[in-house]
Length: 384
Image (cartoon, rainbow, N blue to C red; front, side, top):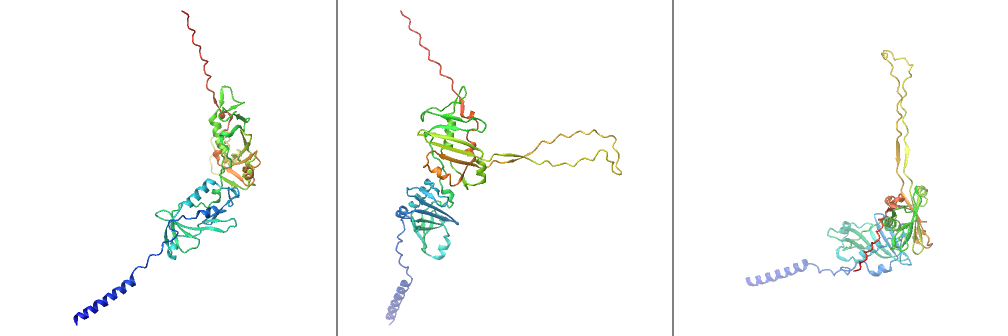
């Protein structure tokens, strides 16, 4: 009887153990997410995209592909896009991969800081081909991402910087004239006649009709000048009717580059000059008249000193700094993009672009090396 009871107890315990195991066993692992180890964005979406739209912290950048394959910054006066910057961004985006699924929990999604930061690829009708929301950067590298409004977040190997300032995507280089292409340069001066330097071929020596005696054109200075002007870049832009630009236009130095194929480029640079303004002179209280009676109780002076006229004070001036530097560029090629660009905005350049140019004619010249002595003839051999 005892043995039977023991067997029944064992069976009951086995059944209860089986039930407990089945009730508490871990659920079967979920199927692997199909996006893991795949690229963040399909290459076909990039190829089809007519526009790239970047949004972050209330700012939006819209870059549009043109029929000729170039890109325009629609968010900044439709200016040409800095293709190098765009290429780097697209390359980083294309190379990024989904590393793992992070969460599908709404609570955890909220902690990953998904706000208004997103990348969108649009078709020609502005319909999204691809939308990716970006969360915060992961401590271990990469960034948390979310496709459209899907309730799940991934970690991607994306390290691209999302620049949401429209101006930063515009190509700041206004001109691209290589130094080897230039045959002649006209250099103006404020207080002296302009100097024209030229050369017959790209590796020829620079010469100028106005070269002082014993001097030669300083090739390094001309090379530096060509680099500054031929690759001039803007630092900011203002409205075409900007007041400071209008004043700068009254104080221009107009440089001219002529290439070996006959094209010319006029680069005008100007700024409102520094001003010295006379400070108003403070009036001193006038001394009492010589015939005035001394005040009651005052002792009369033993002797009146002879009045010595005071030396007039040196005038003092306030300095008003020079204004920003503006440039206006014109190409002899009517189809050159820079001509149309100059109609859009007024372009500022950095001060050093202007101040680094030759300010006096003698900066373009240097002492010429002494002439080589004529070779001496060897003495004739004596006959035996």
